[in-house]
Image 1 (cartoon, protein in one colour):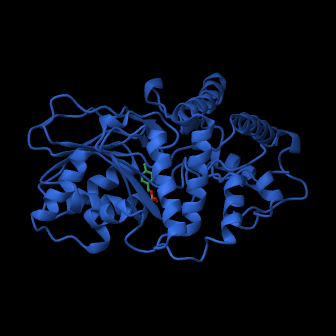
Image 2: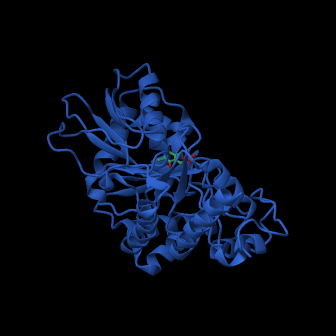
Image 3: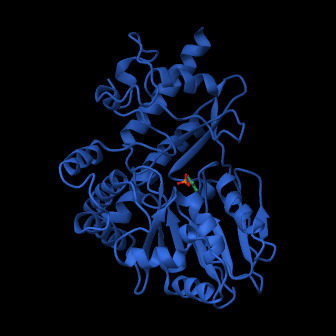
Length: 392
Ligand SMILES: *Cc1c(COP(=O)(O)O)cnc(C)c1O
């Protein structure tokens, strides 16, 4: 029996447990959660909530116990990313989506350039494009499954792209482009990359993410690593007198974060689960451990797909394939939806492709919390279901 079902979570994730599961028990993974976010939460994180329940939950975020928890997260992330001198961990409510609006107000001086190669990169591009106080954004797009090339231009003061495009499973290098304006900022959407992929933070000015992906917590919060140049930009824009709504004001977020707080009330259970995951990651060996583990899981998926007669990696260039989100195309003769529906009945969930992509594919998260052996079990289950469907 899948552990998250055994623990009584079956109703919460919408799984109907059949008396006769459509896949033999012995093939099933220990944990059947392979979603791209919300994603698998480790049992130890749930235990941490129940421990916190006795003291921390239901107490003020302006008092020492919660502030200490926030501080532990900030220090844990500082260690995990090996932050250079002067970099700070800033956090606030609203998730990465809300951070796009905050960044539009508080980080772009005149003009931003965006690489857009899927849903998430395009959404930040839309946010700056709509801002009446900014010049027209330069948006460089390519088809889903590929990656565009950056153009360096004078007058661009923000270069932005996702390290991992969660909608397609394309992963982009994080390198400060040569020849950009002296004080241009590099702003990386690391929502689904942070905690799972290696990064050299000194190549970035803002590295932001939400905790419901590799950090295996819940949504609703954003966290961002700010460089001294990013901090200076926030201050410069505040001084310019630009109108900024208070809840999207990064200066306010910075001031609160320095006091281990958020501007308004955070979800405490999200912080508890995040702190537990950061602790675990650092104990296991930090970012090198995480990157190695996701690389192992992803290589199992891609090598299986390459050998398979009916599946193939969606991302054609192996260098662009993500180690945390693996997208796999299926032959026309096989309906990928039937695979995901059948596996859902067996408690193996959330391998549907990104809804707007409209491809005959499956999308498998290989986040750090997910066991590589569970990924192998999932692949065996897919093979089983495909053969079973063909026999019918
Ligand atoms: C999930 C995701 C987002 C959106 O995160 P929210 O916390 O839901 O706002 C943004 N960017 C990327 C790359 C993501 O994977």
